[in-house]
Image 1 (tube, helix red, strand yellow):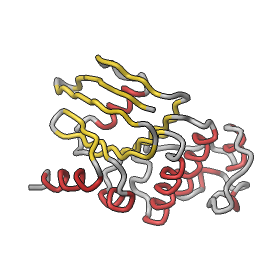
Image 2: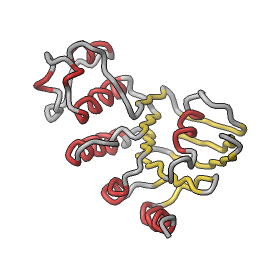
Image 3: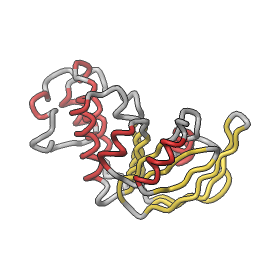
Image 4: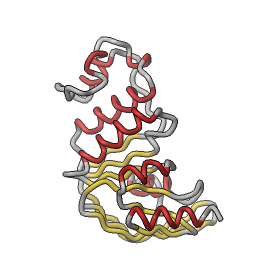
Length: 195
């Protein structure tokens, strides 16, 4: 479970977030500078805030620009005590390859596999699918959706097609506050920001 009633300030802009999520995948969306990544930093204990915050732990985090160690995929997996990969993992046949030579989607999957091996009850993912091709994006989305069956997963994204595909509840940041909305309502509110 994730419960937050927090207020924080960035560059003289004030933000308010009030939400409660029992489990599942939740998208975090809004325009640039709306407070999304700073909210993740609040959850990680890296940014000051006022109010109350409760999360199930352990907490997992994967940044947008995840970089593996300059070592084999196998060694990167061992670092997080990953013993088994799902049969459909793109990493299955690349265990001996240097992780730096993986594609963007494969690196993202490696980072996600490492973090999920820690079995976080709250998983924060900051724009991991940015700049990935669609098959890699869909693979990551499905992995996160499945993981959300027993944890809270927050995925920060700017990709509207992710919202349309997953139809997940969305924490929408607009005008200094954030509201947890059903996917369709979040989509309509985002459309209004274009006018």
